[in-house]
Image (cartoon, rainbow, N blue to C red; front, side, top):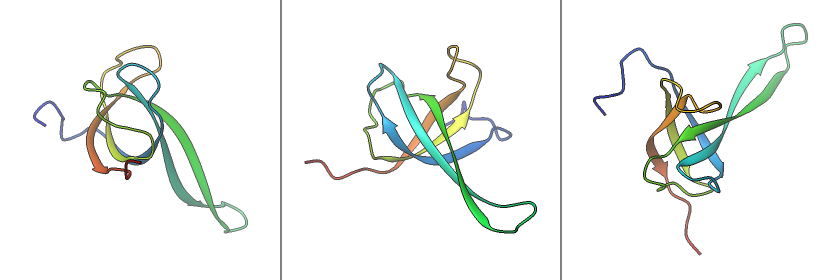
Length: 88
């Protein structure tokens, strides 16, 4: 993990797609308070991340980190698979 810089952002999310080669789509959810009404809302965003070994599968909980752009849509890389989904 030496290529990971101390200042880079890391996020945790669940993989919703692994159909592309060396790319996974990660759904990152965060809870925010509405600025006027104060209600807690769940906001989500789908981020494409680089998975060099094609190791992560749909449903896995992963940690991703910001990096230099790998392609047009990918500027994140897979750092760790925190929890694997049960196979079968």
